[in-house]
Image (cartoon, rainbow, N blue to C red; front, side, top):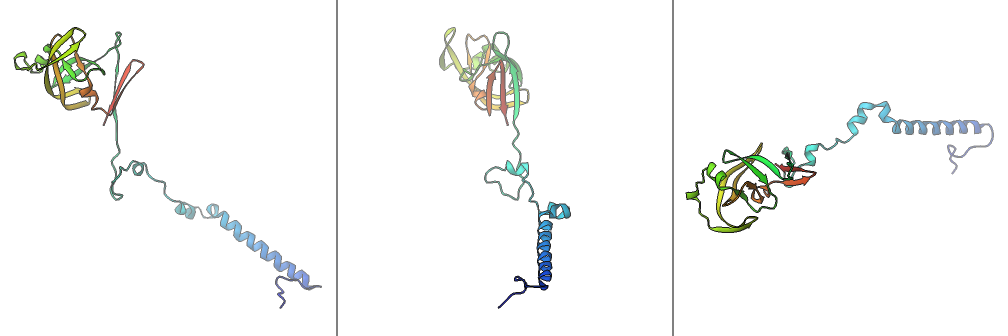
Length: 197
């Protein structure tokens, strides 16, 4: 069976067939062009069709956080201290509410207080129990373990800090029982940066 639409007849009807083919192809191209460029012709529809970009809050959702609840952003705080001319980092530290000048010592195991600073915050020599000994640059000395209610530098505050009071110590030290409870600390180019949440 012959299909007149796809197969042309010989003679004058060939022009009619060619016209139908031309209309068919032009119509197909027009539909294709409208489909490809629908964003330019119908901008409001193209905006609706685009998927929404994920929000920043969704990207920081902690594991186990239900999708229906809005996650809380994790904000880090930072404090910088500059080393003095001798290369040591000194800071005014509030210990149990009393200001004490201390050296930040990343090599010290504990926060260590002089007898004078310990007395200033309420640990009188008679109330201390010197049950330990440690080696220092000045030789072996006795130490008394204590717990500090709070240690604060600016907005950074840490509670219940293990410490020790040493005999024959010239300056109090801010050691690892404080520093290890931070998120991080780094000494670079004479500047100590401490971060916490």
